[in-house]
Image 1 (cartoon, rainbow, N blue to C red):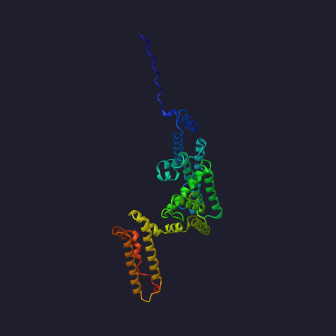
Image 2 (image 1 turned 60 degrees about the horizontal axis):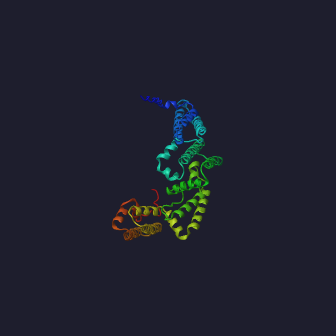
Image 3 (image 1 turned 120 degrees about the vertical axis):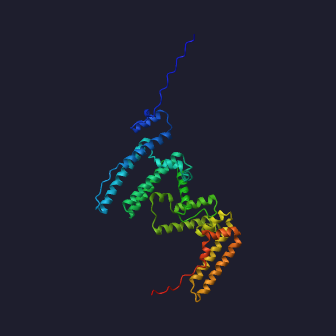
Length: 370
């Protein structure tokens, strides 16, 4: 008889308890020893360390205050609590940096996975770079917020310098894991997003520029002021400096685009044009129609303002002229829009300005009080 093959001894069952350890260095070594992929190791450690420090933040004791405690005592207690929280934040970042080489943020990891806008802004980066950028933004934005809170939002020149230093630190940290080209692309994308949502002094979506032209306008806007830095610092430059930057930006845009495109760009900055363009897009009307409708509104409102501002010996005659202007304007719009589009336009918020054309003019000399 052939000898029976020796039975293979059963493989011991794996238990996660064999890997877990209260010592994070040992936990990291155990994960590596079983061949756990790097991104999984990162996620496990970041989530675990974040949960640990969240429990520690919750457990920070609060000094009870008597009911009669004044604002100074309450402010001192709040400052003490904030110091405890900041110390724990710094300790958490130090632990993660020691373990993983970077102070990863669990919230940033989740945002990267679940928020489409994060992909729009950071999709050209690797996963680790994208999460790192978001973590830096979150960390330094929180530091800036706490700083502003400590000074009650009253920023002296030295406070502005301190906050600006945080933005400088952000850019220096970025340089540690982004190439100069990647850092520039990030700044341009954030800038374009800020412009799209009207956070700056330029609107690109309605300007009719091609991709290259729009990108160069964004680059010029970046020279006038970075939305990415503003997000970190949370302060604006003084009014005079802001006005000077805006004037320089407009001059550079004019030189870049030339007269015809500059006129298109200037029109796009008018909210009235963006409104009618939005309506046109919603109703499959051409850009040319939107421009014509905007010019009709522009001329009609200018004439209405002129009539209302001029002294009138006969208020009734002036009101009749305003009503005639309203009717003429509606008739001109009817030549631009088909009947369904015109009806929809007049019935929507977009058409409210037409009713305002004939609104009663404010009295030139208000009556004296009795």
